[in-house]
Length: 150
Image (cartoon, rainbow, N blue to C red; front, side, top):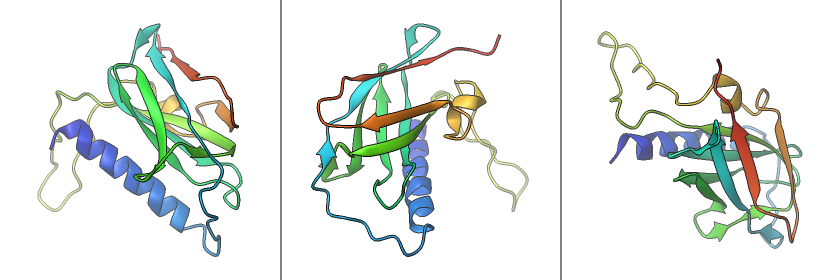
């Protein structure tokens, strides 16, 4: 499996674990799914690969969703069988790692060293990215513009 595929799988797993940790929240059936897609650019150029994550602001209404970035384009999915996002308000973040870098290991018994991020750290966390989205039927495709730290 390619490194970027493993990173995406870990990212999806982290979102799932975070949503489970919200204890006592029952998830409603996916009857209000909205197709949601868009583009991600870094300094005006399409981001080659990575992930976009939506984290619901109100966990009683929303469900985390993830989209895989391929040549700057993404489409969100809530689960494998539910393409789209449950209508509601979400915080957004992006993850993108160098696909040519292998995961380095530290000394025996220590955690692996994370690969190099291709984007500034502020975009990798919903609390610092500055992005929110109101997912609703008929919405236009999103455009997430990232700029390098210079």
